[in-house]
Amino acid sequence: MRSGSFILPALAALLALASLPAQAIGRLADITIVDRETGATLPVHYAKGEYWVAGRPGARYAVTVHNRLGERVLAVPSVDGVNVLSGETAAWDQRGYVFSPYERYQITGWRKSSSEIAAFEFSSAGNSYAGRTGRPANVGVIGVALFREQPPLPAPPVVHEPLGQRRDSSSDNSLGRLREEPASPAAAAPAPASEAESSARSQSAGSLAKAAPAPSPKLGTAHGQRETSVVTHTTFTRLQEQPNEVISIRYDSRENLVASGVIREQPVRPPVPRAFPQSDNVSYVPDPK
Image (cartoon, rainbow, N blue to C red; front, side, top):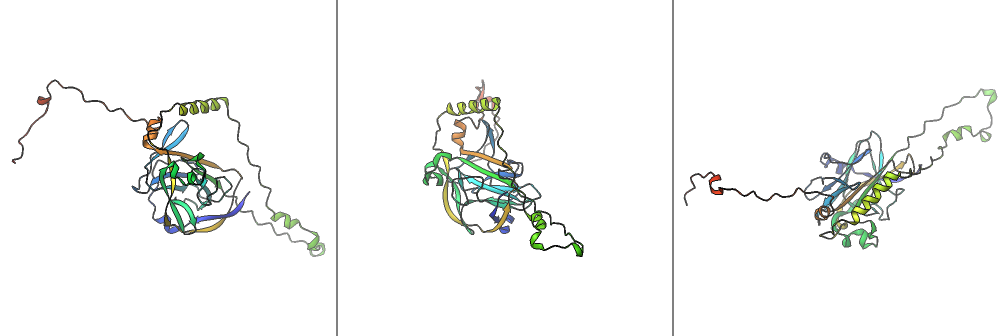
């Protein structure tokens, strides 16, 4: 179990949020991507074994997290493979946001301090924060690792010894042992992938390799303008070393997602020729000029 200092979203920011739309991903928490310019939740497309959203170049966006549990959870967020609080290459054991039971909050940017962020903004991959800091390999993905909290240990029972049997407390540390935290559970090793899963992944990789070339530059997330965003600090002890749930959402421009087959648009039917086009139109008295 790992305990540390984490960030608690400010209540004032929570009250300003709209209700969470239906297209959310997650079991412990609902995760959605919101276009902050329009206020619309980006539709989620499931293709090739992954979730995708289409972003608009130049638009600011937010990652909305809504805790579905009646207990606190820790969300460790990453964008383009970078931890959005520390700027480190993302890993599960890093800092994150702590959500109270059923709490909802929008993560709107790269955290610069406890009172300021640099806005998330869809941009070209070359102008992304990850690209500009020499880490372009994971541009185009948003991640949230969710951890449940270790319940507090029950208070040790009070043992009253008979007066004649009391011993020097320095030679008896049984009560002290009762207060010790149990050993951290071993992190569960991921189950080996089945042959069917391995085959599906290989086919997915092959289909991506054969996709049509992208008609526009790949999207990334830029280090946008500074904005006020107040948070406070708290502590959180994880129930286990590995996340209880990991959510990954890929993103790119709509044009690129259409070209790669992620978004399938309905073909536009050409107009049907008519034998008497003028007779099919019902005319009425026109207005005078």
